[in-house]
Amino acid sequence: MIDLQRLRRDFPPLNNFVWFQNGGVSITPAPVAEAHAGLMRELFERGPMHIAFPKEEYPRRQQTMARLGRFFSVAPSELALMRGVSEGYLTVLRGLDWQAGDRLLIGADEEAALLLPSLHLRDQCGVEVIKVPLVADAEGQVAEVAKLLNSRTRLVALSHVSTDLGWRLPAEPICRLVRERGALSFLDLAHSAGLYPMKLAELGCDFAGLLSYKWMYAPYAAGALYVRPESVESLKVVYAGGRAEKWIDFQTDKYELLDGAGRFQYGPWSWPLVHAWAAALDYLDEIGLEEIWDRTVALTSRLKNGLRSIPGLTLHTPESPEMSAALVSFGLEGWTGERLCQELRDRWKIVTRPLFHGRVGVRASLSFFLLEEEVDLLVEAVRTLARQG
Ligand SMILES: Cc1ncc(COP(=O)(O)O)c(C=O)c1O
Image (cartoon, rainbow, N blue to C red; front, side, top):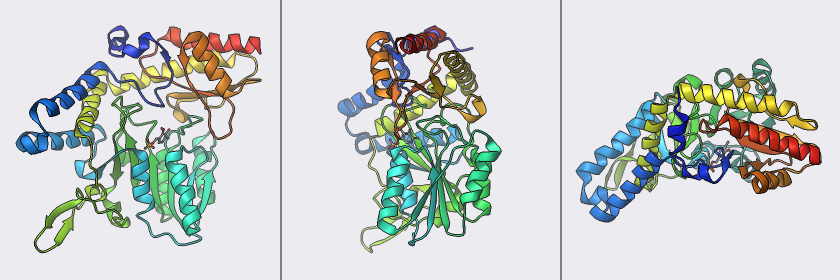
């Protein structure tokens, strides 16, 4: 059972807002913020740790990577440190040899992290970028991907949970299908990692992008690229930076790249931030990922049920928890998303965000730390605005 009153004390900004924007950037819980601040202070008081105290810092880095691996049930060598999903996706996209006319499938509701690199590749290399429509049942969704796969499809890149509309895609059967058809798969896990227990290998993707700062509650911004061991060789290393090597000989100019995902990384990174990410995983595990998911389902269901009774309201996110996660998006007749957000913020201190992609409405992100009363407050606020017109 989550001790909400205790946990909420870890999040000082909750005194100022009703925070429905965890899907943008999470607010940082006290133990994680203290771990981060403590490590920054250590740099100040003791010096750059990997230079002044390498015997302390390097094992700590290994522990942090092992902690990340454990959280996702993968070996540390299957993770490359990155700054976020964008860097991970670009590493994959640019690591393939694209020919004009090759096909890249992306989701119909991608964030700029996947959309922009894909469109840019299209414009530079003549690659055909096709958007997979979102369908509200798992089998239908797999069928949509199947329809669009052809012999020229090299990569299928999808958000596991889509950024604007909050649709959760059936990742496993999609990735299985993509592999059977001889293409590669990339999953953007920005809105699923940290919300429930996840074994990365079981998703079946070749690559996955992770970030620290939404549902993993670490500060902005660290991230990682997961690379399935069998898929390492399908990507070329475009940037062989000074952290990709197994060894390098400065006399003979010979080198060997790391065997696993590490060969794709170059850094440098703020290690206090990366260590703080590992501390955030301890924080989440202590609460319990099953408990976090149960609460996410309870709160999102409560919001969806409440919103459904409001005249003029359209729910954009699927109702079923199997097809959605912690994001709930909706539109209100007669209201732009921007006006709705502004009004919610000005009158009730409720922080949401407007939808992108030319859609009209707002997105609410529901963290475990929200109270039932706060969800009801959002419903009643929207009802008031609906009446006002
Ligand atoms: C689905 C999704 N992917 C990726 C990102 C951001 O990735 P990055 O910070 O690496 O650009 C976001 C949101 O910020 C997102 O909603």
